[in-house]
Image (tube, rainbow, N blue to C red; front, side):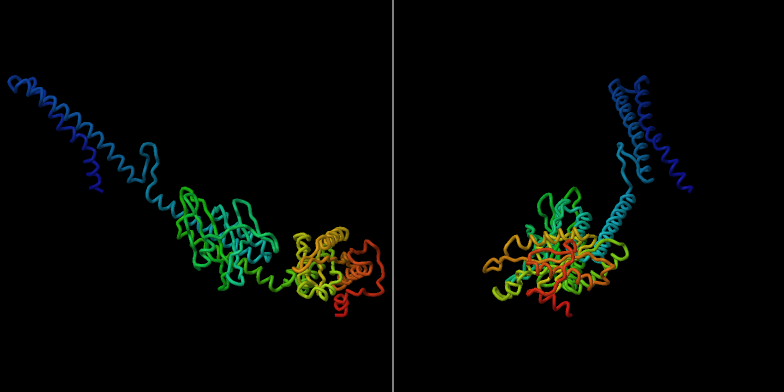
Length: 447
């Protein structure tokens, strides 16, 4: 403490010590100027001038020294302003960088949590892709995000674009829909190099691609394009961040794929009969509890046995696949279509009354008959018959009774000439004999 006091007093005396020599020089010059016989006039004037200049310089330096000492003392005390511009202390800079890193980690963990929730909550691949692209695009502030899935061809493996986010617009390829025209660049490089690739796409963009891997299987690749901006991300940091996100995207995509294998028919891409029985039971319970309407449409391809006999079973499979595609394109997003057996398709329509279900069946009937079916060798005109029913708890006890009611109307449509829709809106008519083409329905009833 005593040493600090002495040091402070010495600093306070510094300006006076610096001012003492020039004052003495000025006094000497004055003495030489006024004292008789002390020197010549020229020497006297020269000494006086030098003494005055030295005095003024020393005084200016003394005042500057005081200002500089105060400035350094202020900076040592935590910083201040120089020229009106605030200069943060080194400790503040380090603290700010730490806060930014922690904030980025929180954002990354939040995005990973969102991707995990998507994987747990949804089994629809289209919705999974759409939600995943939203999460990635928002986290990285990416100009473009694209997902490519591998497709094993007869000769080589290729990457097929299935989803793209460009700006705020998201496009997802639907089952059997038009392809997305997106070229894999860094995604393809990453896929074949089996590692993450980060490249400078130009002066204003940064592109990166990484693998989509789940359960040890390379499913495809993820590609992003970012605007460089004034502070572009470090390539290594971007690669690590992208790999962490891609891991959870792959898991989110994997679940719908496995789910489809369990509940989707391979030929028609419609749900299976087993899945129909599960979903119908749940919707019937909901109908009983909430009173919301529930309807069912059952369709059967007319003269399908003749298609197989005349054109072959390959052509028959192509007809079934095309009928299913037209069904998927016509029904609403929350309706569910199932391959019930053979050439029969069943559609569950939640929150739908009988009149609306009949209207949907008419659209389906027109969609089947409007365009001939191309089997490769020739085009075939195909029609279908429809039976429609609305669940009535007082008349139908379970799923079997629900299907049986719609089945009776299907027989009526077959018996009445095919290529038509029948329901309770037409009035109940007894069916005395079974039409020739309804063997699969007869087998189902016997079972």
